[in-house]
Image (cartoon, rainbow over all chains, first blue to last red; front, side, top):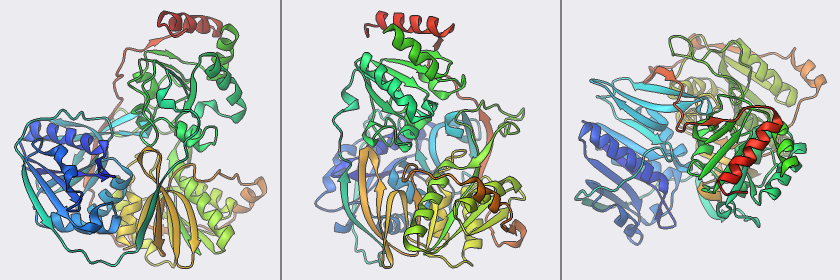
Length: 321
Length: 255
């Protein structure tokens, strides 16, 4: 059976939560196949302590060390992971779905001539088949994917955030450390990290969040939702299309590339509910969605749904509040 | 600067009713409206802005059937100079294979920069773009939110998790995947759209190209995801719905 190798991503000395999604998948894979779980950590001697969190939760931890590997660099990481995998025959390499996985997973697949599938949110095993499940068409449809000659060849997967829970298991870990030398010509320099300037409102601290999406259609409809937010003592937030359209600032974005909120009420107005948005709000206490598309995925996580145009319902609500 | 923009025609599904074909291998497409993939539209916008700032030319390239000509023409109307369509004689699902096909065409073109969207709105793999960079042996960067050119390199900002930005310097030629929202999108004028209808599109047949790989990703079937919750739908007139909503909010202690 394939060995599963989880690539552990870290930033500022902390493991990214997405890597725990990948570990959650690895546990599931172990249940299905009985295979061992390895973790691959690229780091430096000084920073190697980050792996402590994984100790005795997986079978093997590979620490590959060099001062230059402390922070992610696409060309260096690609080279090191590729060299590491060259010694392996049949494996499943798994990433959490991160900005960096968008770079590493496809480029490794090309370099190693092996298949890659991204954003997996389920796995299904029948007698002699393994199917991977992921969303298509913004979450309106799921697809089962079969990999050609899966048993014989390595495969790279990335795991959709929030789709596999990491519940720590006790497994004695073997730790394999290796200091390497690195000498490659670089075409990319990472200059610095900057935090996007925060606004006055922190949407993660609000009890009532009113989320707006593409269904708002026009900036001229913004005042009506602003008034609703005010009357409900809530804050406005939005899905990516609302941020891209310039209706709201970036720090009000809810979802995998924005913030995660858990308010007492999340009122989703004209949000279709792409999975990238849903992971950021589905644990809210009460979710009410207004969307004119009865099949919008947002309804699948909503307690209450209204199939209507928000620009009709919001004014009716305002009159009564 | 010579810029290549890879674009794709996708059905608009965010606000459309999606149903599966009886064999569950596809969605029913005949009533769907096709348009340029959202993220690719931002890649095109970025190319147009770079051309305005630094001069040069823009070549659009797409892999698709006849209806993809429409997005090439829209690109011409906005200011792109050339358009190439690789005729999709058979449907290919594996993004690595599509990347290989695109690479076999692009390797014969002269360019400084390739721009693509981050993902497509239909399959959302986000694989084709970076795989293309590797097949062409180019440096790459994903999720770009800002680009500036200096001599023979670019200064870029890239989106990371949790509102963090990574600043990078990347040598040209290279490939960038552009995140949605990087710049406001422009609209083409009616006159420009008219003019674009007569512009030539270079057609390349799949059979003329060198690609060796076979597809490794097989779509067994689609299914409609189950609802995670028993959603209660509130119906009635606008007034009745508003009354009902207020009642629920009061019951839950929110009002």
